[in-house]
Length: 417
Image (cartoon, rainbow, N blue to C red):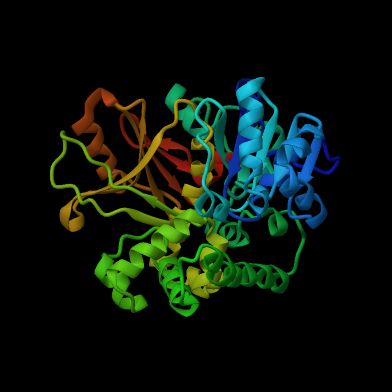
């Protein structure tokens, strides 16, 4: 069901592959990232279970209602009729033909309803907010990702787009964000902010209430605000709890809630028996920088006037570009960060591939990273030897160059060139 105005997403090819192999695919992700729109491109029939009339038929007899659908079918907002899962299970138990069902819905469906065992019947596909590659380079979505290119050939396949951004451009792009409703539309700044503020309001009131996980939206909003202020940072738990005026138990509940809503990503600390004295604290990311800035009440000017905020929002924006592609890479790389005690060594992202190989990333909001800026990547390379595939400093300047054996400086915009 190809809509004429549909703009391709990175997830499309992977979704096609999954539908060729499995009878049912559940698309997960934050509200308004485009799950239903993308799923609808791959089906002949859409069942919108948030329509009361449609839902009534499925409540009455989900098996009979499902038999009346034309496959492949998208079951949208399936949490409104959770018994439809049992009907899907019975269909695929009888007939495991691939590509019959796509399921999309809100996260509360997964948490508030008993899930049928999906092994061999259903697989999941994660979708994230739009990347710059999706927005700027639609015709290149079938090409290897930046990570795959660096692994295969170092700098040989790294190029720059026609427009090379400066730090102002990167922060503007970060604060525009990746939600299709605002990224695809020429909205005024006021309209974008209104949409994002409404998203935050719904997040801390309606979404949290539906999960019955946050009885106090004022406290949740305050906690989210402090998370957003420290986006991509590593504040101590005690510092975060004191700032938000919550205890450890409440903070853990809020962290889990925001992860369940797909707006918070906790990147765990990397551990290795080859390195000692590594801290174990996870690094917290709000998955969309525009959402983070809105929750924190930050404008582009406020971020650009604060070197610490510039660095962390540049980190968060860069990580968002990598995260969406890594989720679709096979075998799936695992994201970590690395920091030794007292912060003597710190690397923003350590990406583990196949259990042994490592690609490490640093993010520098500066125009010309130096050998000194690469010293932690050099240290990790020397510690890991041949298991260290590459180290990359993604920066806000225009130059592509080497900073030593297997260590490179690359403008961030090369990710979507």
